[in-house]
Image (cartoon, rainbow, N blue to C red; front, top):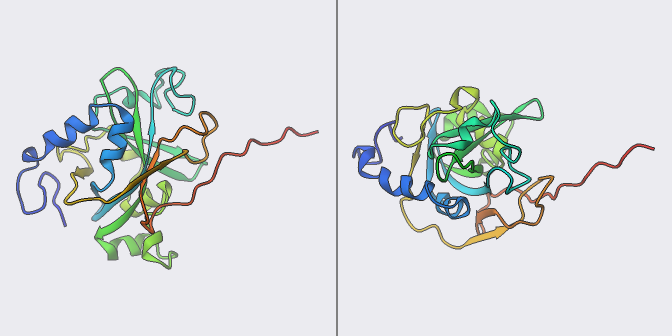
Length: 216
């Protein structure tokens, strides 16, 4: 398993960091595509990212948590890039994003799914009710549960090895990338900012947001 502060093979992370840092400093949709195939190490488990979603900033993207401006909840989204934005949803699940773009202009990439490449037994122990390994990190809440990600990860650096998680570059070709609408958002429904690795079994199912009907 990779050690925080090092990449595979024991080389210091600083040898590889500029590639990721440059990627994350750019436009959020480009960063999202570039994160596919990268690896995230946390809680004794490593996943290879297979599905992500891009979210832009203030006034630009009605589905973004930063759409209406800075709040205590979304402050980390305003940069710098490479930090973790973690939030709690539906009163039961954690989701993790990688902050992207220019500092001061909020944007982030939601990590939606991944395949386990190291620490499988640890992942199974965390999610004993899951029958298939491909379902361990299939979906943003499952990914966080498998990696042990919670509120403690909020605002931590994912690039330099100082935090609780470590983002590592791709270690090979990723194959074909597909794009489509984001899952379950209440605004900009058809913006094709969800990206995934074509044919990968860990990619989560698409569900379009359905507004609730007003009671009569």
